Length: 307
Image 1: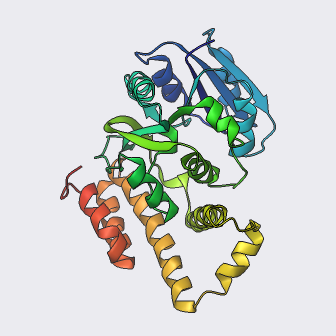
Image 2 (image 1 turned 90 degrees about the horizontal axis):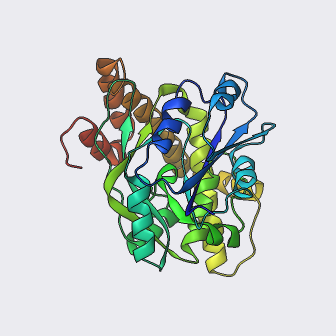
């Protein structure tokens, strides 16, 4: 049985899938197996996966069912003591697994550890947005809907993930809910080193999807609040009905933030890709739409703030 099982789900992963897979196979820590779930891809993903010749790789094919279903399907085939997640368009730096395994071995109270990450476009890698390091910082931040972990860079204890029921189907944001539930049974942590590059590209999340994603994050936080209060859970539809009853100015503020975040994300892809001038202009528009939130991110992106 390997020390680590690596779990990747993929839907139409070309052309970014091959470098993502190669970054896993090129890790300095080699005691792992690699479970890849093809979630009904219709591009060249299946052909690429069929070409892989490594005894550690196990490819599982299913009809398209979404990331949560694919992750839970793959989880059934993960038998390592630790489980590393990996997105099909990201790059893990060579020492990621080695340092995460060492961290978890030396911190038994920690159930899940991430790393610092840096955005990656077609042409270059940007500066990292510093993530908090300790459970006392990460968990409260995520309960408020702020990013505290990069899901594609986490490694966790497999038995704990199975104990909390794996991933629940949240469509766009099943990972946030899982990490909150993990934080209820063990500590969360981040290594203070960039060991992962996450890919940003304009088509990865449109404006409407950004609004849905933020709604799902808020729903995950609502369920966590209810578990803490020992109150009954509600459905997503019930939650959205509650959201519609908020004052108009709050709903407008929320919509503007989602709009700004969408343009910020596309701007980052342009800046680190082939259209930097267009990206900086879009970044300015994102800041103008929601200056209180985006100004620090804008400063970091253009190099006016530290890591």
